[in-house]
Amino acid sequence: MQKKMYITTPIYYVNDVPHIGHAYTTIIADSAARFFRLRGYDTFFLTGTDEHGQKIEQSAKAKGKTPKEYADEISAKFKELWDYFDISYDKFIRTTDKEHIIGVQKAFEIMYERGDIYKGTYEGHYCISCEAFFPESQLIEGEFCPDCGKVTTIVKEESYFFRLSKYQEDLLKWYEEADPILPKSKKNEVIRFVEAGLNDLSITRTSFDWGIKLPKSINDPKHVMYVWLDALLNYITALGYGTDEKLMHYWPADYHLVGKDILRFHAIYWPAFLMSLGLPLPKHIAAHGWWTRNGEKMSKSKGNVVDPKKVADAYGLENFRYFLLREVPFGQDGDFSQRALIDRINSDLSNDLGNLLNRIIGMSGKYFDYEIKSSDLEKYHKKEIEEIKNITQSLEKYIYDMKFNRYLEELWKTLSIANRSIDFYAPWSKMKEGKTDEAMATISLVANILAKCAILLYPIMPKTSSKIADALDFEINQESFEKYIENFEYLNNFTIKKIPPLFPKIEEPLMQETKKEPKKEAKKETKEEKGLISIDDFLKVEIKVGTILEAVEVPKSKKLLKIMVDLGEEKPRQIVAGIKEYYNPQDLIDMQVCVVANLKPAKLMGILSEGMILAAKDEDGLTLISPQKRKKPGTLVK
Ligand code: MSP
Image (cartoon, rainbow, N blue to C red; front, side):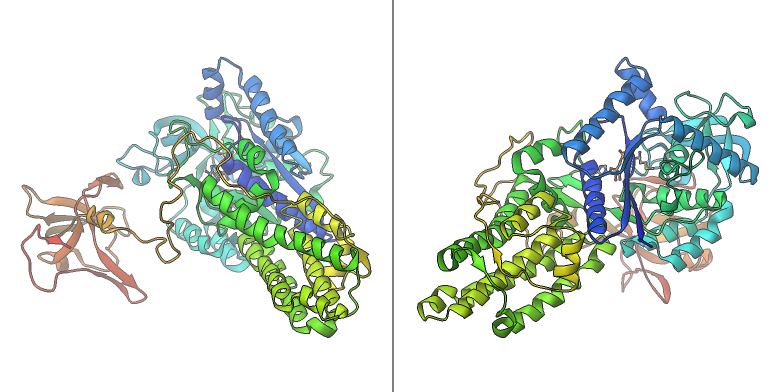
């Protein structure tokens, strides 16, 4: 039986037009889907729009439209862009689709009947921008959202709750046993969050209307569903869950691609909902990093949002795809600049790949009238062939881990072998010496490397790779993958075609800047310097010696102590520190510690904390950092 593959993007909120972040997720998913199709998987690729919730209702109102009119308009913009970008999705779902609404109500009913949903009252803080609830202890300064920094609103309403707490242990077991979170480094983050304790989740609202109503059987018309419950269920309703179920054989998802900001919803809420529904859990949840602009978060107010259509129009869609996937390691943030994009195009695409193709077209025409034979390849190029084989046959694993940058980096090694071989074996000299067979073998080696490279590059640059294949007289499809990559056969007796250069060099930025980019001649950060801070940055942090005057336990907290520290100021500072597991409060009295003194105050479990006490922690436990000799309270640590 043919193996199946189900890949999803998040469904995008329709409160804003598509930007580079949306394009990034979608292009990763598209490249993966194209790769799996090329490998013969029966692949289903889903994308779409998330159209309910308070945020959309408010944005529509601000534009003088009904939420549905507004959603129709923006959803169409996403679909148009993905079509323009030739995104190979199999279905574009909208959460206002009738089938989705029926499926969501069905799921609610099942979870309710199972006893996983109960009615209560919600009282707490809600961030409309993130459409998420937060306990007071997590808020910044008792008021602001810890994710986006916007002000939260206090909500007190009757609400249905999902018994998320019931699934805590099963979730933890799942993270360990199935290891579904990519990149692996994000796994611990999720585990820590779950271990800290899960509260039941409020999943209905009564203070606005724009959402899916509860199933008729529950008969409570003033409630609409929480937008994340509605949205996450899209991954199964798109397959017909609750309606015709025709495509449910694709479930479970193999890859849910998401940005790091929405990993929590996908790695905690979603599997818990699925457990409640008795459905299998996704195989992977892959979280990518964020694109910034000159190191800053993109936002409409800053006017620094990158429009992906403009970039693709100026630099070429496939060049842009290559850049997005090559530039940053999966999971890490990346900075978009025209300079970085131009560098990639000129060096990787134009120099390494384009010039190589041009040289091979030129030499094959000049020496062999474009007719190439691969019969003497192994005789003259055994070593190079071995190297190429090792690289091309070990690339696939990077895609299964969504490490496209590593995949491309490795693939490019085949191009350096090809470029090196031309220079080293110099077919022009061989021709002069009458060693025609040897010259032919080298040209054939390089043409074969280019052919293999084109096949492997196809998922990321489908049109460009097809042009290379066309110049080399073959087609890229499942069969050619098997033949030239898996079985490592060579193109034989083929005719090279002359084609115009694929990647003209770019001298100057092609788009007008809305905001200034750093100057071209500005010194580039070297690899070693990345992640380092300047002395000025360090000096911004004010660390002072303090003497502990008082320490007491914070009621109901497993970890926190409330500590009063003398920093040589008018009155002692109150600091809340998570050290209860390691220190008895009485033992701390009179101890000297180092305190970050210019930290913005924050509230932890409702208690104001005016600084941070420094500590070191390893397998052996935690220890506070004290000066070696007693110092006056308030002495600066430098
Ligand atoms: N509607 C929810 C997802 C529901 S999925 C069941 C949502 N939508 S969103 O439109 O706000 O964001 C969609 C995706 O875009 C997220 O994965 C997010 O991480 C990504 N990005 C938004 N801005 C981004 C960057 N600047 N850079 C990279 N991706 C970012 O969340």
